[in-house]
Amino acid sequence: MQFATSILAVSAALATIVSAGSVHFVNQDSTTRTLVFTPTSGCAEIASLTVSGDSTANQTFPTGWIGNWYSVSEGADNTSGMLGEVCFDSWGGMTYFDVSAIVNPDDVHGVKEMFPLNTGTPMSGCQTFPCDNAYNLPDDIQTQATDSDELVCLLGNLATSKRETRAKVGKEFVTGGGSA
Image 1 (cartoon, rainbow, N blue to C red):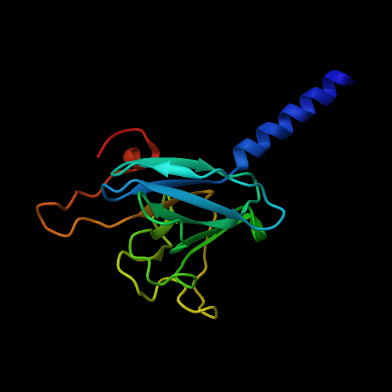
Image 2 (cartoon, rainbow, N blue to C red):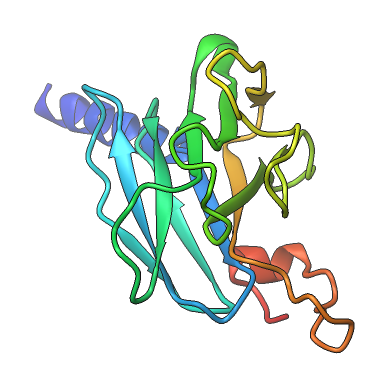
């Protein structure tokens, strides 16, 4: 009986790992950023995550996690900025997400865009704020939904001159399997 109970416990733990959501953070410029996570009441706390300039970092979330995050640029005050918001494993097994400018619409250096890893659509947010593809007012209808449990969140600013502009990075760079 104890063996069967152990097998069930291991199976449940593996199922949790398999269904846990993840976000692949892509820092688009040379500024190091720290991501600050805020869970909804009753959800697990997530430790802050530092993403070096021009690099990626992955964060796995507990099953059913609901909350948001903002980024703080190295050397800047810890002030809420553009929010990445997510609800994993929600109604119908879907993941709901959006970029919100409601808390601090003046943040032009933090969270920019979010989208599912494997499809790239639907997308929330934009490279230049304000835009119509993010929450700007509390009554906006901007929440996106996907059956994917892997999202990408772009941080920082793209290069502005043609000489500085990077080529589009592939999935291998985002997931840590290669370089830009």
